[in-house]
Image 1 (cartoon, protein in one colour):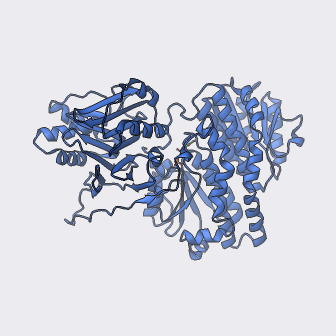
Image 2 (tube, rainbow, N blue to C red):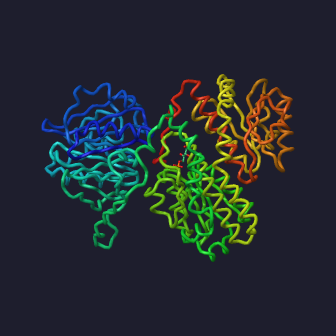
Length: 619
Ligand code: F6R
């Protein structure tokens, strides 16, 4: 939700900032802007639209500057427009912001009463206005900045610079992600690592209530910052200054490029054989080692009465697959909840229970809040997370990293299969430790998991056929997705992908639930995607197909048993067979491709679907 960048050093700042913004565009894309400081004061260029639109309004040649800020916006307060685009500047102070200032209306009213005039409808503009109002009252810029921050309530990652301190850049974090990159004599900051991977692999992950002061050629200064949430306690003692920890990241700049594909989403779909294997590689030969490394003790496992998982969106669907896998392999009851619901309900999380958050970004506000709530109740918190150093990974008691690499396409694909891989390994390890899975069964499962890259390759081979099917549904107003058991979450995920990318309305249902209502939706030609693997539920799902056909629906079956569906389904998309618990891995692939091709054929920007942003860092 909004991407912010900053640079200070010896390079020409504008190309660096624009490059960084381009790589963060998945975080928001309704307006963009940059600010820079040089001998002539602060210059600002901003516009409604995307980074390409910003490039089109920049003067040629680009203004020379060694320091600057940039922003790509996902609108929260104020419609997408030139005037609401960041950076916002008042009295020579320029600010970019990701997050929400919850008390901006009170602050704005106070400032207006003091005679300040606002140029935008955003919550952000109160920040430079506040700073300059304190400066007008005689405070030095840095003092004014700190006082203004103390006035703010809400979540924010901020980049700030001032014409009165042209050699300095300030990065502030309170509730929204921010990383600082280190190069020789230069600094970068960004909402997310991919922004500057081409320039550095060394990053520090900021914590809430911290401020970095960055000046070219000098040591970076990291300090604790007083904010509205941490302004004191009553001990009277100031906590120690934070320690600067720089982490070397093993992602490469190429990983965040399209590498010959037309779209990131397409590249990420095709990367799945590799990303699933990368996620499992370390643990496949001994899933128990995974539990040991995470500090999950045999005592805790044997004492578990149930397990809680919370996540949002696609990660929530992975959680549902995890529930089926853990319940069937380890016989531990699993409660799965949407994180935004979990955080506000009466929590029945026992002390010493296990709470799992699943999050690609590690920055989703609701998932972080759910994790914190579970932690407060005394649960051991484990996060299944894709971004090393993210907030979820820093705050959880244990981390199980998915190794999917940077996911840039806004619609999640490779993170989903990586999350399922981590959960299946967890299910196997818990099953063995609880004595519910004998060694032979565990070996069969890990043997099938080892073959998963190959099986996913085979599922991907249906791409050209799926593209034809996509062409046949592009005119649909609505679609249904049906599945049963562990493939019910796959029906949900297929429907979510289609909605996000093609803007066709779609619903996922457990196939057995059709007769309880949704069957009323079926009319002549309605495309109904049915996930129907061979297994104990095959016959039952076949009956559901008959019911759809009898009412004129057009059945598109995803199956490892195409022969048995001849004459029953209108289209069959074949996938390879595998262990029933692992069938979601192969079944989701055609559904991802169906959504992708449908979106492309409909002329949508599938990497940046309308109204969405990759990391939902606000509630
Ligand atoms: C859908 C999608 C979202 C995310 C959700 C959670 O394609 O990408 O539904 O899955 O916003 O994000 P993370 O996993 O980063 O917490």
